[in-house]
Length: 486
Image (cartoon, rainbow, N blue to C red):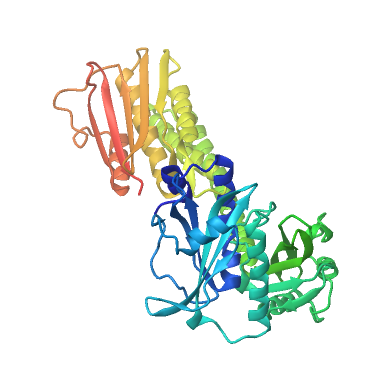
C-alpha cells in the first residue's frame, strides 16, 4: 500500500518540513475520525494545483465506514465542483448538506483546508455515514462539538500539536473512555467507559464537576510504588500529554489534547484507557523471564561443575584412552554451558551466536593446540540464532572445530577459518583447515569418529545437513553445516 511519503514524492512539491508535519497529522487524526464518526482522506496538491492526490485514509472506530474501498493513490483532477478544490481555493471549511448518496448510502461530506504559514498544504475530506449516526445524546453531542473545535484547529495548523507521540499498543482512543474539561480543568463530561476506569482505580466520587488534576493527584497517593512525576503538568496549554495513573487497584493511561478556540485555551479533551490487564501481563512476563534466566544460570553452574569433575577425573586417570574420552566429554559439557551462560544474561529468545562461537573457538584452541601455533579466524556473522537451536549448534560447532584442529592440522602449525552467514532463512557454516587433505574415498558415516557421529545426529535433529570434503583450493578439508532457522 502506498504511504504518504510515496504519494508526495511522486506527485507533489511539498517541502520536507510540510511532509513531516502531515505525517504527524496522520499519526494522530484517528481522534478526529472517531469524534466526527467520519472517514478521513488526506488530499495533497499536485505540482499542477488543479489535481489532488489521496495520500492517506482513516476509518472511524465509533461508527460504520462511509467508504468501503481504499482510495489512497487516487486523484481528483480538474473538477471545480469537488469539495476538495473548493476548500483549497476558498481556504474555508466546506460541506454538503443534502446527504449525498455514495453506493446507496447517504453521506455527508466536509473538506478542511490545512493552512501552514500562508499556504494550503493539504485538504482533509471527511465522509460521514448518516445511516450509522446514533441518536443525539450527551456523548454524541460532546464528540461532535469537540470534532468541530479540532476541525477549526486543523484548518489553521494548530492540530496536531507537539507533545508525547502516540504509542499504538498503549495510547487511548476515543472509544476507550473520554472526558471534556473546561478551561479550569474541571470535568464537564465523562463517558461511561471513562467513569468505569476511574472506579476501577479506586475513585469513589463523581467525576463531573471535579478538577482532573486533583483527582489524579489523589489517586497517585495510592500507587504501588512512589514516583517523582506529579499530576500538575498533565494539563498543558499547547502540548499533548500522556500520563499513566497506577494505583493498587489498577492502571489507566490518559492522553490529553488541548482545545483552542481562535487561539485561546478553551479546555481539554482527555482519552483514557484501562490498562490494568496489560500491566498485569507485563509483570507476569517479567517474572517469567527472570525465572527462565535464573534456570539458565543454575544449569550453567551445574554444567560447569560437571565439566570440572570430568577434567579432574581425566587428570587422575592413568589410562590414556580413558583420559582422552573424559577430556572430550568435558569439552562437550563446557560447550553447552557457554550457551546457557549467554541465555542467562538476557531476556531474548534468540542468541547472538557470534559471541558463543568466538568463546568456543578460543576454548578449543587453548585445549588442543598447546604444541604449535595455529591461526584461527572467523569471517561473517552467525546472527541471531533461536535458543532451541543454539544448544545443539554449540555442540556441533565445537566438534567440527576440534576435528579441524586435531585431525586436520595434527601437530603441525596451520590455519582454521570459520565462515558463517544466513541466507534464505538458513544458517550456513563452513570450517576449513589447510592441513592434511581428506582421502578421496572419505565418508562421514564410515569414519568411525564419535565426534562426527555426534555432529551428524545433532544436525539431523535440526533438519539440517552436514558434509565434509577436500578444500577446493587444495590441501586440508572443509566441513559445511546448513541449518534452517525458520
